[in-house]
Amino acid sequence: MSISLDEVQHVARLARLDLEPEELLAFQAELNALLGHFQDIQALDVSEFEPRPHAVVLHDVFGDDIARPGLDREDALRNAPRTRAGLFLVPTIIED
Image (cartoon, rainbow, N blue to C red; front, side):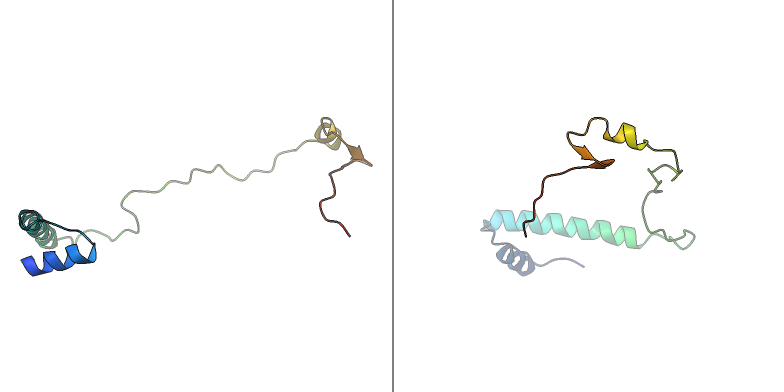
């Protein structure tokens, strides 16, 4: 299969490229070379390989979810600018 010059001109027009005739011929040659590579790939026998969802093995980058003791209330509130009854006080942003 090869790409005709008309098809290259059509694609160039769709991409809004104003190409000279030499450039169209160069692109035609490059696209035909690519199609040749794709035909080579399609000719390969891959029946012995299992299909994979990804090209590389994916590893989980997160650690195990292990419960650990957190801060106690006094440590958590130690540097808070305002507290009351063991809670953080924040400015009101919604008015009645």
